[in-house]
Length: 387
Image (tube, rainbow, N blue to C red):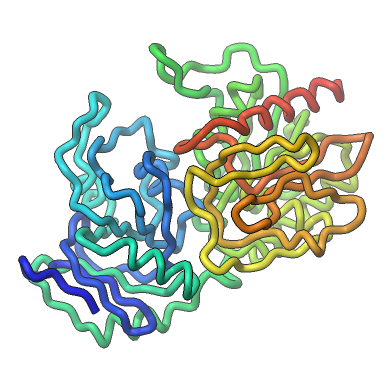
């Protein structure tokens, strides 16, 4: 148990093993129960908190300067924060960036998300790495009144992400068109005026910057809900199909998503591209399996090796499940691997007839490096080659 000696704690983080971290609360008040992960990115806390892939999780930020650039509407990856809460080393300072329109604490409070500062995030991160992603209860009470036994009990009662389909909770409720492109100085977000390819993007929890990258690659994008059928996809007469990122257990989401993808694989010759959960959905549809990782990959500095070219890319990642490469069938090749732990980071259908591929990492970054943006251009080239 840790405690701050200089002031009365106004927030606490209770782990299922009984460990309790005390600190100073900011953002909303109340209690959140979730899985705890850590993210090593040095920038992009707003993008991380609004990434739908973080549904059901509280994020520990290993970088101490969280909140120092404030927040702004342009950096949201979806309408509201999706992560349940955040854990930081130092309390946020006053914003010092020309793009800031609001302080992080006020932004979190307005959107019902709890945060705790003053935590030994190094100790917490080591615990996550050694013991696996724990279940936690995060509480914020300005008066410092905490029922620790009840909080630990809530953490222990949390069922975790295994078997949990969260895509249905974060997907769009109806289809929509997307034409906004990547941010560029000085115009900001321009619109795609001359798209060359019609793409249907299946939304399992899509980040806006993924859709922007598709638009920047020359795509006219129509986004469909996670539960869309193959018939609904093909009704839009697409040139290619995109499978988005998203949260939760891929095996659970796959109960309805995999049959749809299999139908598209069997009955069409369309190029197909997946990212993150979309990568896992494609792997399941092709005959592979997925596994829960000990603590997952969350950060913007993950080295990934392209097995075909030998090139190493620095990538952004956010996933707690992975494709088990040993279960991939003979007609599927492993295209990318993590240089941190050797886990699978990419697959492709071994076919001269069509282009079907996916990656576990995030080529759109946001935050992070853009080494892998070429994957969007590769998708566009595959659609152009098909004619």
